[in-house]
Amino acid sequence: MLELYHFHGATCGLKARLAVAEKRIEIIDRAVDRKFLRTPAYLKLNPNAVVPTLVHDGVVLTESTVIINYLDDAFEERPLKPHTAIGHAHVLWWMKRADDSLTDIGMLTYTVSMRPKLQQLGGDELRQYFDGIPNAALRARRRQIVESGLHNPDFPVTLNRLRLMLADLENALAGSWLVGSDYSLADLAMTPLLERLVEMRCEDMWRLERPKVTDWWERVRGRSSYRSCVIDKPNPEAAQHAEYGQAAWPEIKRLFFA
Image 1 (cartoon, rainbow, N blue to C red):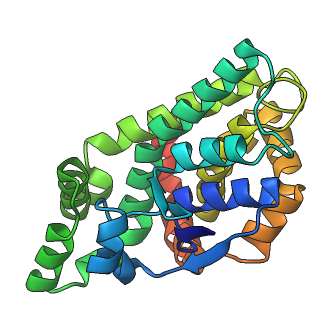
Image 2 (cartoon, one colour; image 1 turned 180 degrees about the vertical axis):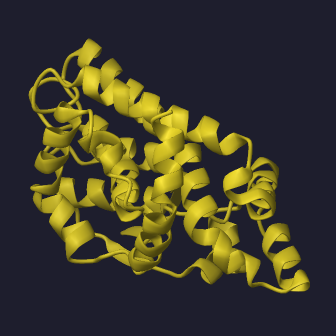
């Protein structure tokens, strides 16, 4: 039995769902909400209180990169890694690149879109929110985001790192896909990051100067896995991201292209 815990709107959860869709694996879909992540039942599975979590015949796996690599290894049909050692290495490099950029996507999302709601919480509620984040580094980042917003000194640094991420994509795209001639876990791992930028109305980050990324993104959007995971099951927070992202875009654009 294969169970996948996630919630619609989670970037890493989308990564795992895309892998399931690409591999055409039958799973028990455990779609939950954010509050469930802090329950004793879920914390027993994933002490970090994040998604995704995969349970395969009673064995628990966490971390989206681990999960998608495991799914590709455990289910041999429709492989998502090249058969050559160098191809495999390049895919692993992109999976790490996606992980490295996840913090920046989180900084952008919480600074622009999630902060207004967090600011509406009362003192006790906000304290409980911070106390419920097990990871100390993440807890400190979230606290700084709520306190500083767009004036956070780390925010321009985050945007510069996202610019470098998109430059890496542009430079790597010699053909249709990131590694070799076939779609792979490299493309899959980067997809949720750009999807969040689209939700935040930040797609001009690449449309204005990255033609290869623009073409690659159109190919990604044309895949059946994207349709089933994103279009057919849209992020319920997408409207919120769009509203706040559009309002913040002039300042984001100024910092991003500075």
